[in-house]
Length: 133
Ligand code: T46
Image (tube, rainbow, N blue to C red; front, side):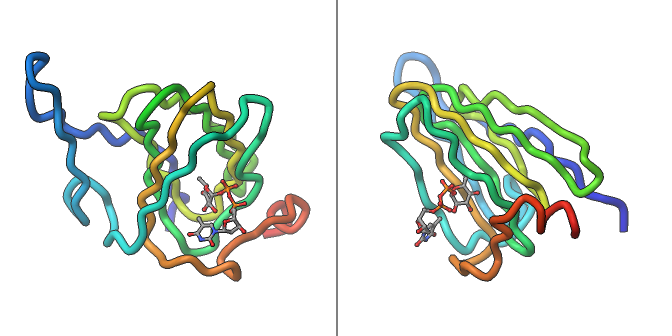
């Protein structure tokens, strides 16, 4: 099976400037998997690097609900991809086996839509181990 690449997911913004917008993520239509878990990350200082792991099974879509978030991804071939998330109507689809480094701007809030429940065994947290996969 060919290696799946990270890619942008664009959500429709339903509404108009007078009243604001709603964007929707439903399993298999807006998001390419069944949604099992949603979590959000906030109050991360700008000098902190989050992530530094890859997932064996969990697929994700990451969205910056507020602020700007830089997501750097590396796949098993060593290819790298950088996504600047800065609008709540777009996110990045992160396939399995992608090492991620995440930097937040002041006040940024990251929403993660995930295909799996939380399971620590699904994480690869050692970069050397990731490079051996
Ligand atoms: C990811 C990025 C975007 C739980 O107990 N349940 C959960 O569902 C999650 C996501 C985390 N945790 C615990 C595990 C750790 O003790 O929260 C603590 C911090 O997790 P972590 O160091 O993995 O945080 P991040 O921000 O580096 O990574 C998280 C997700 O874990 C990860 O899947 O892709 O957000």
